[in-house]
Length: 363
Image (cartoon, rainbow, N blue to C red):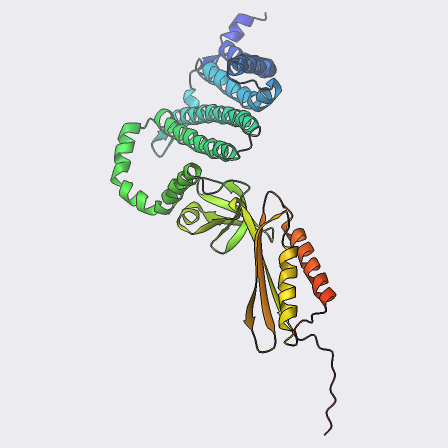
């Protein structure tokens, strides 16, 4: 006669069958309802966050729900497996470490890692909210601070996760471990001195604000647009569209020209006119160029007879254009050059070396 109770009480690998059914049944049940349970918990977390920030619910749920599912499955599996006695048949030792200790260490490592992953996704969500608020302001400094501290706190949580794994998975006393590490702290500091200097330099950049993301800068003979400021380095997109990575220490220690902070742009004109040009014509040319440079976009200008060279008279002009008034600098400069060229043609002055005379020498 079929005896169900006897079958359920039958021991298999040092545990009755009914325990296996309860444990794996509960894990399987959670697996099927993990999405519903994780969404419910995500909604509760969202209610707490909603009190501080007005944020889209879908964005939060999409970011958190998957790592939350993994975390819940791992948590439930560990709680359920705690009720099962580790089978003696599976006990073995590898380098003085038993298979049971190895299993417990692996389980603790996976659990802590999933929890840290969940925290990192929450940091990503908070960063998204702060970025959305920062985008509403004209100052881009807030945006780069958000990116910096997002990466910074991620590193902090990863370090904390590593310490928790050492403590709970490998039963290491963190206090004693840190004390022991102090003995080699000097060597580590020397080995990582450059990285520490770059990290400190990144804080200097964010608080001193010599430049920000989107600025055009010139540093170490490199000219380009700042794309990212990280914990260790700054990335610059050059006008050749290459991406240059510069250590933050060099960005701080080197002479840096923030081109985006210029209030005016300067343009220079060098004219070499023929030595056949009379003084009256030179004076007329200078006055004509001055009249052309009296433009609403030009803040100040200067025109003068610079030098008498071997083959030409040299006239030099410079003018300054407001960045806000004339954003398209090259087009404006081209228009000024065309007007000056047209004026030179109008008054009949020749450029130096513009003679078309041909001489035939007889031998």
